[in-house]
Length: 65
Image 1: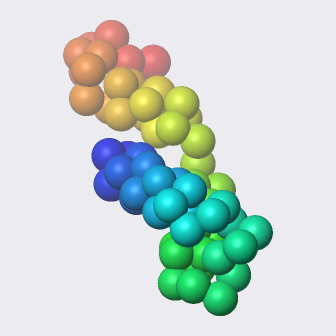
Image 2: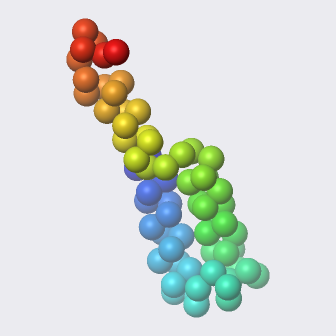
Image 3: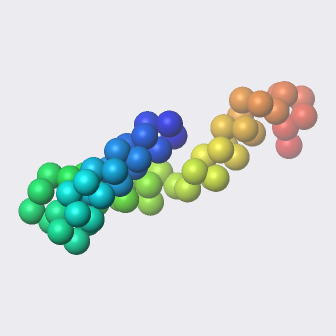
């Protein structure tokens, strides 16, 4: 989850530096933005991942339902 968030931050800052996603289709940063978008959709939302991590590692075993 951390790597996905860091990758998305890097891709968004890079696209802002090069003029936004519309202007970067021919640059590698455009592909990075598209790939990070795809990864965020496939992995699931950060809220879902946080709930999954919380339920597996924070809640004690006897209390899990």
